[in-house]
Image 1 (cartoon, rainbow, N blue to C red):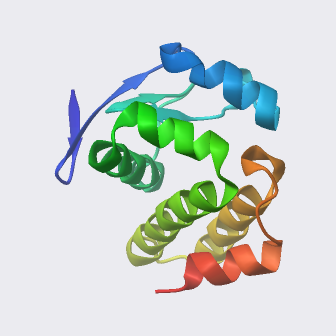
Image 2 (cartoon, rainbow, N blue to C red; image 1 turned 90 degrees about the horizontal axis):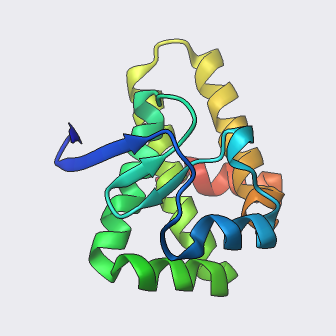
Length: 142
């Protein structure tokens, strides 16, 4: 078990199989574990590769969210409600971006990360929840 700030987590390099989450996400959003999609279920982060700190920040946000609501209840709401999914991911992307911005001196890389995060938040991975422009605004908002 690893720890980031006050969040304990374990990285697993396998597809998640709890609560049928992977199958639901694949069916709803067309995601594929082999393409590098990341799932956080409880305090376990399922991903192909090890993660940089800014992604640990993102995923640890989901650990906190699931701890507060209950893991299965959080995932059921995540799949059922686009507004809930957007709010949860926006919070995680804001924290990820803020962490990266505070810890990276290369502002070109910071801008690239912002664009990548906005592309993800506005893309099919989450159900095309907003425009790219709105995603950029939401992520940069303090």
